[in-house]
Image (tube, rainbow, N blue to C red; front, side, top):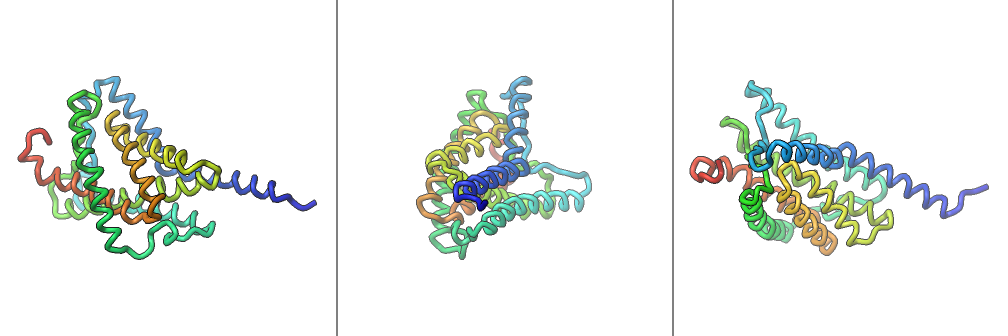
Length: 254
């Protein structure tokens, strides 16, 4: 007896659920679990006095440190590439996600989104620190070496590529295919984004949830993912490189 259309649809949806589960288990889903456990640990030991070091030294030997940091960048790029590959296998090309040729509008839109998110985000971080809701975040803990700035920039844009491809392009697409409305898919994506930033504190989680809502609706409205990748990369670059440049001159950054 031949399979019915409903049976095929059920099989397809089951496959999509498994795909989403596995994808999140090896990328930002497990990051969310780790971040929540780190938050619990920080709260128990005093969140306000907890310090989070981003982009840390991974070895005492300079070239090994460089290699390990570049490997972290490559891992993030691979996460994004995996999301693109899985969508491509089902007939959704990168161009359909808005990752075709970069346009000037993408760059300008990315810079606008970076300003829209970055400036309030800094104020929210400072407010969270004042209220004791955020950890003390050191954006760039790498020691001073010839490759520090290039690697920080690569890391910033690797973060942007991985997060926006997986958490926005891949996840929202798959959740809508599984029957969720656009609003619910964006909310789920945004909650995930907030959760895997909780290691920085409650304020960071809320701020990134709000960022996810803005980015999700921006993508669904324009169909362009490049502005999100660019905005995220610019925000992180300003945070990482700006910290290196200004930490010795602004007391509140130390």
